[in-house]
Length: 72
Image (cartoon, rainbow, N blue to C red; front, side, top):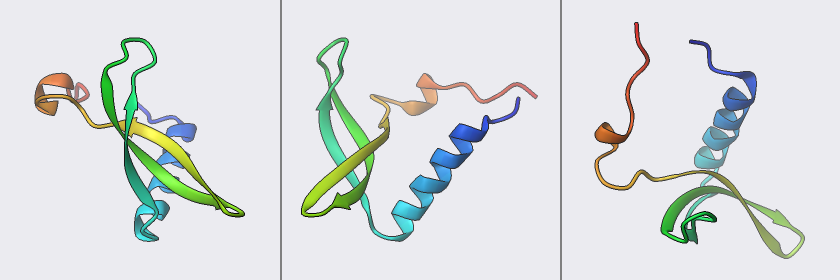
């Protein structure tokens, strides 16, 4: 399985934000269920405004139960 280029580009952006200290963890509401989600965001600025770019949310419960590694 190959990781798509857009996912690689987003990951590189996330790494740069982490290296620069420009990450935030925001509590947001899931648009479908309304449940609380803890979202990892890159933080940018537009003049005096902060911009938050969401990259994903932290897994609820045990993440080892939520994901399966790729098959060999």
